[in-house]
Image (cartoon, rainbow, N blue to C red; front, top):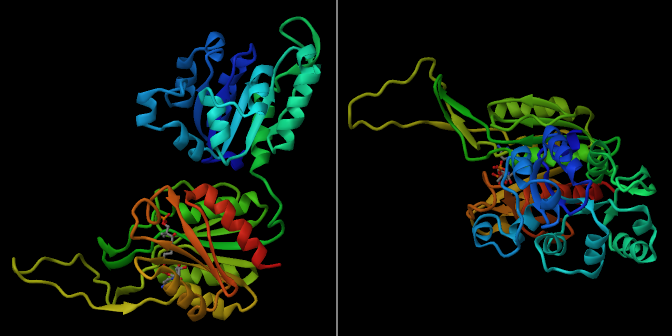
Length: 399
Ligand code: PMT
């Protein structure tokens, strides 16, 4: 179930008897490592209490479109942007009809219109309502528009009827949702990805480093796994949990990162350098903790240049598709183009790290893709969503 790890999932619950199963659905999603926000229609609260869903998701439940308190926190547009997927479960005949018409008169309808994330519906209704021409037309309209239906299942219904209209079991919904994040774009390819900062020791207790959290590189590694790749993540020190289904080598310094990359790239197809590697390290590492001298005496540290991991790998393995980043505070595209040529790589992903809401240690990023053929600007997205787009573009470099 690792495909759901760290994914932002909105579970939207509408008013049907199957709403009682949504509690188990939320529990299973949390167990799979997803971050879950729950939206409930007024009808849903007649079947199950928001308190139950709050306890299971770990977050307050979103119920109203025009709620000043909610809008001051995560408002409906932020919620729509936050989502990696929206799962409407149960999805009643009425909600299907409203979504088919594009109605935005409640929170659920608004979110579904405002999001760019995949929307999945788990229909749950009486078998005659499901079979009705109107519902079938709505189902066709919605699937033609790209929404995905999970179910319904066939069987005995709460009303005593037998036939199609039962909501799928929570475990089946979780599996269907996980499938949304799978692609086979990089099936059979091996990717080596560097992430996080490096630490350059000054003495046994001090080091030089930077603000990289590893979020960007880890998101790329996760997206590559979802795309079917065999992934080797080479990570500097971060607070992030190691993603599942990949090999991870932890390193500290730039020199260690280079050695690990050289070894891992020997049989790789693609190398992505997202790590913020320190350009310099202290010329000497003191064996003992350095002591303060006179109160007003300064200290001079002599630094030497670190090896350039990306440039070295690109030179050592000319057949490898190499992708680097450019973290800039000025002349973003100019510097990115210079790095593309100097490091001899297929693509540079340029980000403006002077903007604290993107780049280092933020949840979002906004990048420009610089190649020999030109520049493409991607919209600002969560690092998870952006990583999927990056993997999509990087996989095309090889074609
Ligand atoms: O980790 P996060 O908090 O999520 O932040 C993400 C990020 C801002 C770190 C990431 O998006 C990013 O920009 N990574 C590259 C940071 C960097 O070191 O950029 P640079 O412009 O200094 O280096 C250019 C390229 O050369 C990078 O691919 C870098 O990995 C590589 N490099 C740099 C120096 C060096 N000695 N060896 C290298 O391999």
